[in-house]
Image (cartoon, rainbow, N blue to C red; front, side):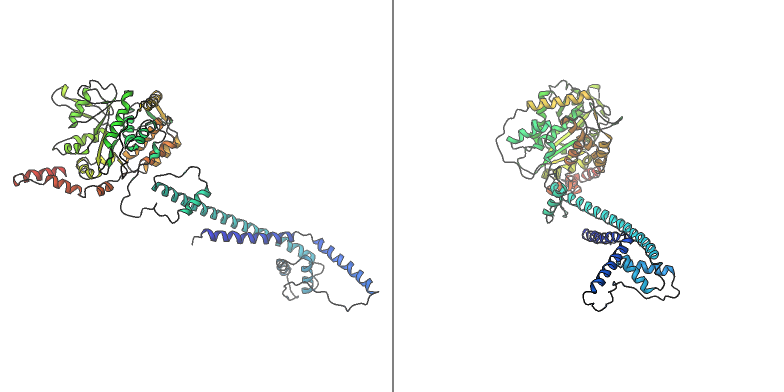
Length: 558
């Protein structure tokens, strides 16, 4: 049975009392034998002086001096062995008797022992001392074991308190201050001991909240998201995340991550979906502000028919088919682009067309796989070899629209959810205000400076310790693409914080920002229709003569 902390503390108290008693006994055993003899001599001298005084004063009746109260057992004097006498002597010493008291008891019990009594006492004292020290060593070892057990119990309690606090703060979209002492942790843990809100025991998925502290200190936050959000009705994360997507898209194939002498392959591309409840959240305009932020520093160009050459910029555009997008990017010689759907419904209607390859090609874009198509002539063909391009995807929708539109995409391209970063807006929109123009030019210059410094270095180092820490944290996602996204964002923080090295802070910020918007939450908030039911509704025949064709299309979807 495991002992709790109070039982261990009682053991410590009992052992302390035992050690005190043993120490007192040891001190007593170390008194020289001649001190007892001196005491007897002094007593005899006092007796002679008393006799002389009796010649003048009336002599009182003679009395027998009281013998020391020593617990002894009368033994048979005949045939008693030396070992028995030695054990008897030790037994007397264990009662706390002095050498004089022990000698008197031995003389009274055993005949003819007067001359050997001192030797018995000396030998017994030595053996008793050995016994005492053996007991002392055992007590010390027991005390040490008990103290270690108590220490482990206290450490386990401390870790439990810290974990409880961490979950409590996480639930409130906060983090534990770094300067908390053990006393502070114990005190705060006591204050929230009756608050079980950090423990989600319901089956309903809680609404995720984006940890805004992860944005602090980055140039995209201080120069763009924060100043715009402070004076407008837009949330900062809805601006910041599309800007991060563009920045990492631009850095694709321009930076290397090195751990020692080993190069770590990092895919800097990611797909982003901004989702909100129906209302005034300004998702599309937030994305457009993020794209416009990079235009003055020549990192972004919006696609239009008059665009002749992308000049290495990230091209923002959309198309009705993957072939059309490939041809458009070939026309402007773009190797970096973001396929932007300000409404997910546009894409959902395109991928629903029979024989459309748009959804499947978007899957290939994520990992920059071979993306090509030969139509009739070279002017109507496109080819992007493996790893030569970076095409991202960005869409906006509501929770209601997501419930009906997303299954159309994910039902055709089954690997789509693994490649997505779903950014869910807060439940309530900000108060509606006039749209205020904010000059973000100075912030854009700072972002450009950081990007140029990173490109000059070409290599972003990472220590073996951080590499192990990052790998261990990323492996918790149990998905290779989610693991890669941890590396991608850690690299982003290393650049935009001006560190130019992946540190533990970069990893921690990424882990905090990797909150997962579960699809079951979005489905609960959106349409209650299941995936299969949605496809069945799409394939329901409008007239009897179309029944056979409609059934055929349903089988193709599944």
